[in-house]
Length: 318
Image (cartoon, rainbow, N blue to C red):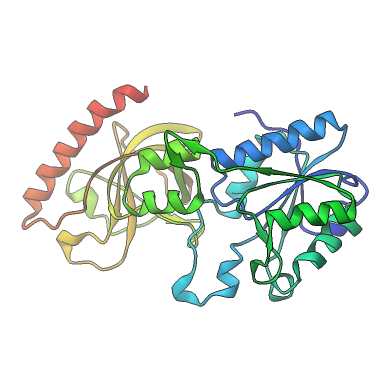
């Protein structure tokens, strides 16, 4: 993956001069899926033609999680650092990450436009998706942004719904796919494998006694969505190494446990110390549900079958 020199800002006061007259896009951009990338590419292309800088204005967390109670929290498809890493490969000149606060969410739609787009940046063009909302209570819509553009002197381009193989590409659709374990279709809409990152921590050690030692992963961000519980074929990155693995997300039903865990058995990798190391899991395919077995022997037999199946499936990824 090629990386560009992208500037990241957390305060609009720090970017005024360099990004005055920029071409801008705004939004949560959770997932940075194919439709998001289409908008970003249009921003970069327009900026190049206008001899201007390209800029994204986004947020450090999902605004709904500030507005809603705990039971309605939105799990993220991309955590903040992951979002920055992906954006660094796009060619954007800059990203402004706004901290989501009650004060920010209480700004009216027009005041938001005046404060951020007009007074600070004097933007020349704004490009957003058809379903873009902004301002207090999400009261501003994309068509209103066009009117504000006419009023304050900047162009607005609205990008219509984008489809991939007849699927509307939306973050909510991808969340539904992950909640159903369909990581293949989720990857198609994302344009990459869905991934989770964390560190390897000490677990119960039970996998080793079963003949399948696992790396237990503590996610970097608990706000990031996990696929539904089950057994997955995965692509793993650790210590500058890539290998395939069998990942279990679940509660270890056979042993009557209740804590949800992420554990990965690395295929054909043995005797490697990973404790404390960064670990990235890319979800390739779902094999099956997590099942409660009556005996250890039944579990071991199934794990051996899973390994045989995975070794066959990974041939198409090599």
